[in-house]
Image (cartoon, rainbow, N blue to C red; front, side):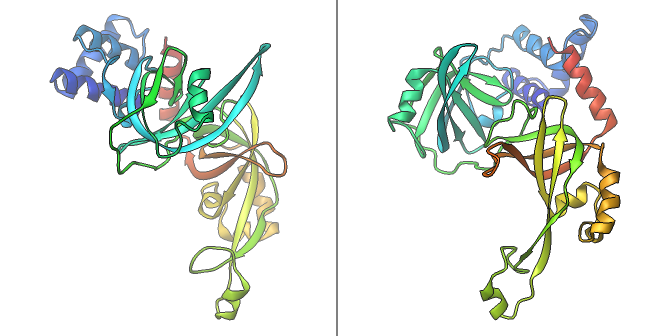
Length: 312
């Protein structure tokens, strides 16, 4: 569900009006403003006219909307990342981050205030801590905490949390290790595939024990490609089904002669790539491990570009 649809549903729920009525008011507001505002912007105006203010409402993580300025949530920390130091425009600082989850979803939280960061460094909060956040700022589907936000331990009980990783639309330039992203990019280079053998039953690396048990190995391929989304180029890796989604059949990936033809075919193609940013252990540079490939729908692309142009 996209940001606009979630916003419409929340307005309908808070106002006791039908979703269709909210959508009618949004379209009327857009028309009144000659289309010079996005649907989300028009929906925010409709919410204000209905006397709805989400600033002080405690939300579930799945209800968070990109662009919120004062989000309030409670969740369990399920993963932490090392504190990083940075130097930007001559200003030195630190940033800490963790993944916060509740029963509905999870989100990456970035801490920029030294008081908040000290809670991580001192061990006062960590994995399995239940914390309450007030006044967080949602940017690119991440929750950012400045010195104006509040972070503290909570007495609430959260047993079962949703650990399924959230994916956010993000450029390669802005993506950070550990993030799950979806980006539209062009294939600018493809390397020769590498092959390895796996246990046909478990999919894990084929071992001597597997051989002794009479199993026959299954051959698999790994393909490295370079993607460029207009902000940066990044090496990326695909396996199995994701290679097929590039338009390369199994008989092509396992034959270097056939692969050479397929390679020429896919270079320059634009698709949506979904995966996790990791740091390559050898090059120490970011790399996208792809777990999803989607075709670019021209109609959806036009809507996406129009929304970006109209967003204030």
